[in-house]
Length: 225
Image 1: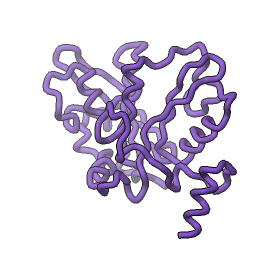
Image 2 (image 1 turned 180 degrees about the vertical axis):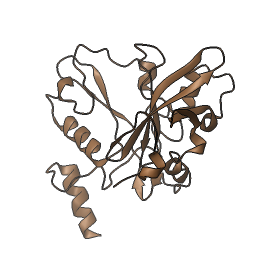
Image 3 (image 1 turned 135 degrees about the vertical axis):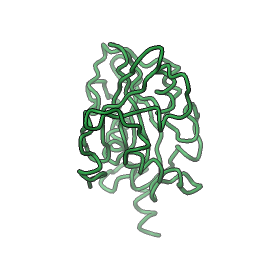
Image 4 (image 1 turned 60 degrees about the horizontal axis):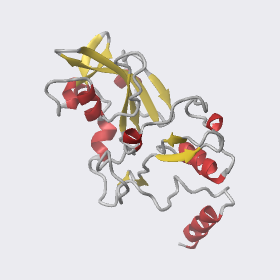
């Protein structure tokens, strides 16, 4: 499905659409440090993530908008909807004046059990490489991403080179512990696990064509209901 119409995205720089995610160039301006530029990822779930490119080699690639605003050195932090901009027809346009926040705004009205548009939200998870023993992050926003993670967990010989969404090798550095603590929970960035981000089984992360006992039990129980 198309998340946005052509009119809604018209003229936006760095536009890229892949399934349930849209990417655009974004930035935040500090009077002291100037422009910090990055890539904003907008997910159908309502999640917003920024990959920062403020300086060559910056490895902050999974920031919330609020964290990106703070990272940029913005003096008046806390108003990211207006301080983070995207380029539209060559002009800096605050997020609040675009359509990019429509799924985020809907997600704020989510039901108490943490579901979004009838779907459970999933936090980021990690899998350890069998070769270098480094842990690699898996973002679970779509059914496809959940399947990649599901299969990686089941594979005792999983290696960094098997990661399909990011080009990573065993030579790449492992995330710092401080970054690993950020698992993309919508309630709290440093959440260690709560009902908002920990899923115990849903149609997004369980698969009818998988023969593992977890998926078989879920499929059987769903059919019974």
